[in-house]
Each structure stands twice: as C-alpha cells, then as structure tokens.
View 1: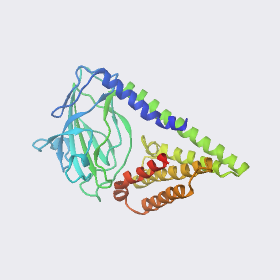
View 2: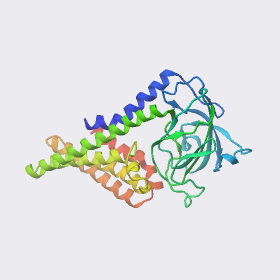
View 3: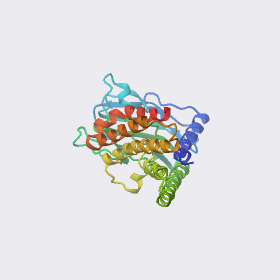
View 4: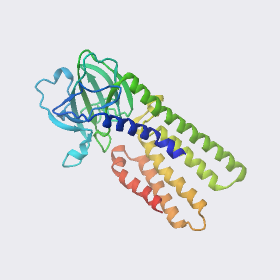
Length: 326
C-alpha cells in the first residue's frame, strides 16, 4: 500500500501526460511552438527544439545578435556532449503562439539542474536558486512549482537561464508544461495531496510498529518500523521535493544528501527485515555484505561533495538491484 501511494504522484503525472499526448501531438521547431489549436484545459508539454545560447547567461533584453542553436528539450547536457559533462551554463528561448484571447495560464516547472531564472515576455516569472557562471556565484536549488504566466497578447516568449556547477547532471531532465490555471491547480491538488497521504500513512505505520517492538521485543518489528520511517522521509526529499515547499530555503546540499541517505537506509532496513522474515533460508553473508556496502555509501556521501557522489548513482542503484535479485 505504501509503495502504491509513493507511486501515486508519478502515476498522476503519467495520466496527465498521456492525456496530453492523446489529445494532440505538438512539438517545438526552431524555437517556436504553434499552439493556436490547443485546448489549454489539457496541459501542453513544451517539448521539441528550443533555441539555446551555449556557455552564456543572457537576459531577455540582450538576446538580439546572440548566436543560438537548436537543442532538444527535455534533454541532459551530459547526453549531448562528447565528454559527457553536465557542468556549465546556457540560456534557452521558446516562443509559444497561443489561441486568441488566451488568459489565466500557468506554467509547471519541474526540478531543473540546478539553478535557473525564467522570464516570460521580458518579465521574470520565477527562479530557483541563483544561476551564475562559476560555482562560487551559483546557488543551486531544487523546487517543483506551478506559477502564473503573463499573457499580454497571443504570443509568449520564454527565456530560461540555467546553470549547473554542483551536480553531475546538467540541463532539463523533465518536461515543462503550460496549462490553464484551473488545470494545473487540479494537477497539484492530486499530486501533492497523494504525497501528503503517503507520508502520513508511512509515519503512522512506523509509529505503530515501533510500539509493537517495545511490547514484543522482536527485531523484525523495529526493522519494518524504520523502513516505513525511511520511506516517509524519502517521500519528502524526492520526486516532488515537498520539503522545499514547507521550508523554502532548505540547504540544497543537505536536501540532496538526505535523498541519497534514504536510498541507502531503505536497502539496509529491507535487507535486515527480509533476513528476519526468512531466517531459515536467508544467507547472513549476503545480507550483511549489502548492509555494510550501504553503510560505506552513507559515510562516503556524508563527507564528499555532491559533485562527487552524484556521479556514482548507478553504483548505488546497482547494489539496490542486488537486493531485489537476492
């Protein structure tokens, strides 16, 4: 049940995305997205080829004469560069042609790597962190939000400054959406509501099994309690990142570390729980090897910079896969 609730925001996102795709296929070309025939009661995915100024942060009033090239959105910089690096800065631009008299639009901004400022028709709409050309001048932040979009006429020009100097990945991983304010409000009510329900149920499960452990003194109960508690924390520090809604200035480095910690401790508590549950057939060497590896990962992530430990996410997930196979 808890896992289903944890997947609810993702399932809702897939449902909305599927509805959009089924309604109509629209993609930007040469930095222009023609949405004159789009019904904005359905979210519009801003996918396709945007224009991008490489290695520079340009304000909207300075774009004239700046060389720009087409780039696929969403996509990570790591996938588009020969050296596979995700470090650097860029300025994106997209022009959306709207139906006449379109009003009350909002824009859904997912987690971007790793600091940005967004303008619409020259007016700043939102920002996360502070993008800069160097690591010292950049303040990363991850936040998922929907904000009103200014629509003075039938055309909206989006300009997005994006900088990443602190994470292994750089660029735009997830889809940016535009829709009516009502549509996005409904979407957020479902996604954040389901996340809140998930977190609450997991916390209650953790407390119930903690009480049972105090009364029965069986280790399997404390392992399951800690698994539920860890998963509850993970629901706050991953996917939608609700922690940044509750605490807007939460430290990004610790936000990222906690997300990774919950991955490690989920594997630890799962391994110990399954070892107790299937004690007659479980192999102690395998279980404690998995536990030991994740303790090492935890200590490693605790002391090194995000730029280092985010490079090793495939290794961390691979060890999690070993537990599933076992």
